[in-house]
Length: 185
Image 1 (cartoon, rainbow, N blue to C red):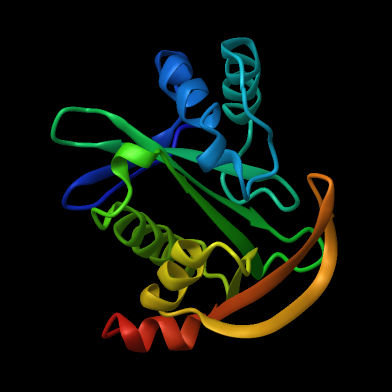
Image 2 (cartoon, rainbow, N blue to C red; image 1 turned 45 degrees about the horizontal axis):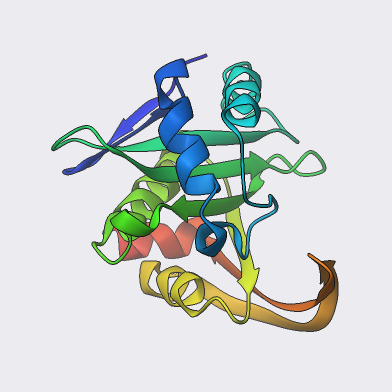
């Protein structure tokens, strides 16, 4: 099922087979993969299988991650992807994530994509609460979450065995009423 969300500069959309080379390329970047659940290198075969699988996910299906390609309108480049997973135990809550290729970082695309994704989750899917987590060493990620308006709710110390070592996490969240107030609704 196709989903397409637009902002001034971006299109958040269902992945397409033509995205495979660019998707594999930024997932193969060790710096991009550093705090993510995959490891670099990431082959085009892995990327193609991922695209096929994610194209079958229905938006808002509880317990299923939906990854959306972030396409820059000017030039059409694939900047990265954003994702959400509505909780299977409580379909009024979701978790979000974001990945940007290094060449697209620092331009406000992450903020723009997260803002549009949160609008969709709260105003179209009618969710109550959205959360996100990130490694405490990933300062650009947590600064971005704070800038978009999520509040830090927890700091877990050495709570996750990740890529051969213990990692600490920050957890963030925002409620629909808080998001609506930020957006003037």
